[in-house]
Length: 597
Image 1 (spheres, rainbow, N blue to C red):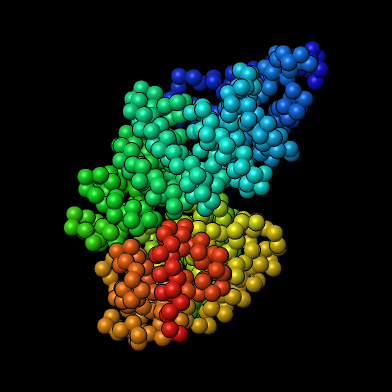
Image 2 (image 1 turned 180 degrees about the vertical axis):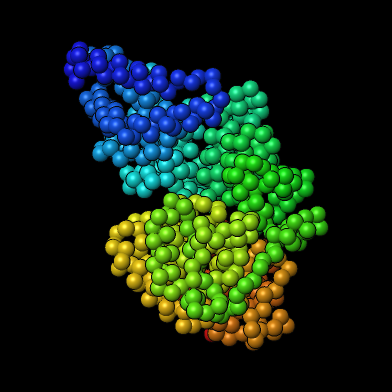
């Protein structure tokens, strides 16, 4: 559009109307405003408005909004600013808008290039005022796009991590916060390296969170609300190494404080973060401290009328059930959570003409349509199938636990969203602990499982249900594998778990008083009791206190990993097991090497 053209004038007027619409209900309750803006956002996605705005932004960023003498041309700069504000305001409340923005060809590439271009001058505080405003708006836009899970792969493919990292050292607190939030969304297992390089990040985030909670009027600090900050914390806590760093910097009392505010949106984020943190055994011990009040708050809020708050509280308590059961104060609560109804026998078949076992489908809800087709095909082929939309009753977690216990096979339908979901993690880890046969189904193209999910799936062959291949060809292969499994015993004795302290699971034929030397071969290592593991630790001068929760199954896994994938082995020892000093690393590796076969 020409600088003084009628088309530009009409475009500017339209932008103003769209912007005004977003603030039409100013002063109304926040939930009403959010629902209204989401509705408007949905309307925008059903029109060509979003692509038009994105293309206008691209054109202005590429050609520039300054004249040859360096002066800002208001007729170009103002429409650019308004266009970005419209995209920000609606993507802030609508995932669909954020996804459509990212899908516009060349848009995220253009934004990335502009962020790279502006970075050096910003870091030296040499950007002009108008350029600084553009930079801030671009940051807000990237933040909103990164919050949409379906955009994460694209942002990673475009190397947004490398773009964001330099801004962690920005002199602008707002820019640092936004960079942290974007990285928390798009980076997972690699976030540990970023935090190690920038150790002040977590400390800064905790300071902002504390001050936002202390602001009783606006509930914000440096422009960030307590809810937004808690969301960033929750996203950071997906990484198991980050969990420890967050707790070390005092996140637990702040989350407890936020959970008690009565604001349901804040509560949803805080209890969600607590559930994510609870998957670490050491953090569970800290959460058990009565003076901290975590368990008491969760116990009260699990009765919340807000479904998301209630579900997260119940999930956290269930994840900590063994810790609760072993305590004096919360023993009754823990025992109640550990009660499971058994309706099947171990080692039974899963076809419907038998009375035992079923195929359980463990999935994240965005994959539900495809998995309903899987369910129907399996049932028509004679399999008994458990899926939550058909069989859930009473307590959600209780039903899930019983479904795992009474299953013969668990289909782990994995994706990035599956990995990020604490509910899915609870299901997958429980199935793994119970030594259920796990059959992985890939639900997201090009996704590679890592972290806790990668350890569970391991090197298992998966069935690609992501849509890359025809459904018919994939389902036929899955049915063949399940028929093979139906002809054999698929359950075994429960696997030892680090969260079940004080309980020795003894496989058939192995007794607790059997000495370490009596175990020979791979199977024997997997069957080691806690006493056997302790003897092995003592023999190789490894501290019991540090590795007290390790099981024979985990030792056997590490021994095999050392032989099959040495690079992955040392990464697991450092990132997952937590060995960061050379002497312990040497002793542990030699200990594995000395296990007699």
